[in-house]
Amino acid sequence: MKRLNSQLQEDGAPMELILLLRTLLAGCKEIAFRVSQGALAGVLGSTLSDNVQGERQKKLDVISNQILKDILSESGYVKAISSEEEDDVVPCNPEGKYLVSFDPLDGSSNTDINSLIGTIFSITHAPQWMKPDDPSAFLQPGTQIVAAGYVLYGPSAMLALTTGRGTHLYTLDKTHGGFLLTTPNVKVPEKTSEFSINTSNQRHWEAPIQAYINDLLAGTEGPREKDYNMRWVAAMVGDIHRVLSRGGIFMYPYDKRDPSKAGKLRLLYEANPMAFLVEQAGGLAETGTGRIMEVMPTEIHQRVPVLIGSKEEVETCLSYNNKN
Ligand SMILES: O=P(O)(O)OC[C@H]1O[C@](O)(COP(=O)(O)O)[C@@H](O)[C@@H]1O
Ligand SMILES: [Mg+2]
Ligand SMILES: [Mg+2]
Image (cartoon, rainbow, N blue to C red; front, side):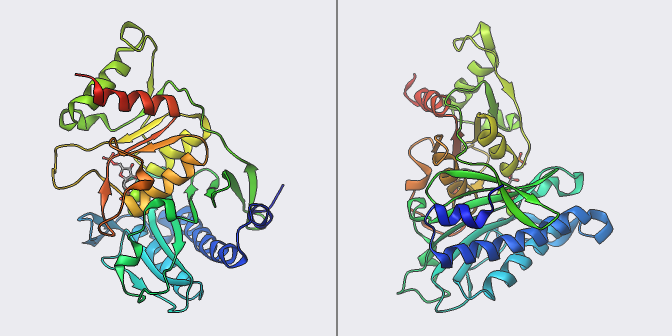
């Protein structure tokens, strides 16, 4: 099986980007090991502190964040880091060519129930004008991303990665510790009968989303004349991996619980990297009013509504905006 390195070279990735990705993934392998140790290593449970998102941090949030911060800041390739778990950007090597944004541990509510969790990341060029502690350099639209991916810590540790030449899936071979290419150029089916949304928020959704979901739930008796199945992993990395693997629509739309927030999921750490991966696999990634990757960020912890997945299903969902 092909190794990560040769696929990245085949995709024309510059050597320094390949070395940065290998460094980042070495951190993810360390996280995969810590996660697999679970209670044996005392990594389960919560800390006593809340992060800038206002969420109680899990021990694994803090551990994963520290592992990635250390390995990236020592690498020399990175000018600065922005993390879901850090209030501000973390300055690294002033000569570094790249910026890395990451969600060190996605699916935090799953850590203590041994369910799916992962790490999500994206890489952009570091503007020469920027000072390493300048957050404005991170306010680049998703169209500027040069590499994005996630590592899913599941029954097997899997990597989904794109450098803009398709999306490939790799599996971590624990015998020699390398990621091997298991699905090259994965394609998201255009049609699906599977949707993914936290329906406990239904009463807070806007009317078009309410109508769209009601029609899915109506099945063959309804206007869609087809039965749909529902899945919710409560970890975006797990739900998007299912979408990449067999199609579907994953949604975390705007809801009225907190009108000051445009959604729950973070643009830089979650929505943009997942949008790049799914678009490179032939799917769509929308906010409801436009392409996620064209959103011009205004701050590093910005949230956006998310509708991602099978092309025809996302288009149908968006068409409900025009219905009375
Ligand atoms: O608890 P809810 O409303 O189901 O939200 C689940 C969503 O929240 C998240 O867990 C947020 O990510 P973090 O765990 O990194 O904070 C997503 O992975 C997931 O899609
Ligand atoms: Mg997350
Ligand atoms: Mg997280």
